Image 1 (cartoon, helix red, strand yellow):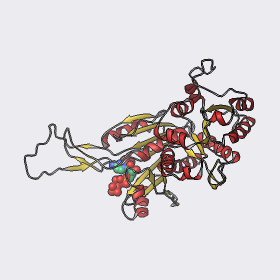
Image 2: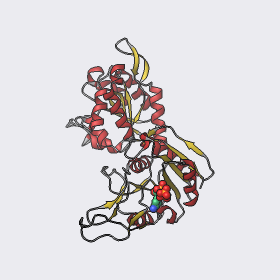
Image 3: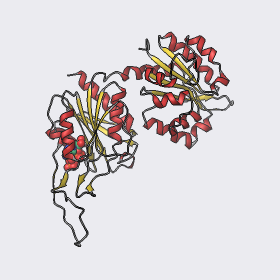
Image 4: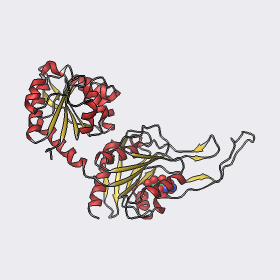
Length: 395
Ligand code: CTP
């Protein structure tokens, strides 16, 4: 699994930096090409020469005019199959959470599309500080994998949560991610996201509170697992993900058209979008003035995209419910001829609109019900994709 893979090993300034030598050595022995990137403070704990000797490659420094890599961090970011930061200090975690890029390591992480693992090591009190915890939550929500830290004796002599995860554990996670990374390779996945907007007049529309976060997380997770992804998105403030073809639409009718075109040759359609069920019967050409004390809008049904779309691909729907969640979701699964439905209770505060977390139940055609715990939307996305991979393999 590790043979011929390019692993970027980021090392930051923690006393646990010496343990990165063991990791670099084992990864190299397993056949990986290990490119080490050290922060300045890491070099005060352990020398670049150690890693050069262990990996046979000179640690990369983007400010090195003699580097064979050209623009070091970009070349590295593109070559990476995986990035691992071990040990990761509270400082690097804070910088990544804030999007700061001021050295080779932070620039590489910001520029890469490869999955990134963070293995924190620090004093227990720094790890449990709410600032560090918030930063880790942010990174998790963005798709980073956090490994450890573990409980044990710390450099200060105290016992607590802060020890770098073991080399074995880190290598296991790397292998899992590399393996999983490819399980959607060459598959075409269409994802819809966000809430459609149905215009009333040139200024106003009927919208809903969908944030697009679940759909974007699905699109990115599918991309990271090797899929060719088309993301059909209603307006959201989220940044357009790299490596994904984004198709911007506004209304349910436009989404229907975009979906019909995108599903040609697709392996799966995942409808995470909150599609308006009704649209104004007509859109006023000019802004409606407040001339009368009341105003009635006549609404007509929008097309049901999932029900109407046809083709030989997996169909995954969502069911946003406020009551009788499972019963209603099962009905939708049948009515819309879905392979899977992902149900969530929108009255649950942690899984509501705009939240970074979600608590869902995945139901399949056979009636299997899998109730997941509260997870980040990225984690939920990977759970859904695990099922998609499973179902695609059976076809
Ligand atoms: N959906 C769709 N087209 C619509 C409405 C919904 O394709 N016009 C899709 C959604 O993207 C979602 C699934 O159908 O994957 C269920 O959406 P939901 O809003 O929960 O259900 P509805 O079918 O709209 O039923 P209701 O609003 O009555 O619960």
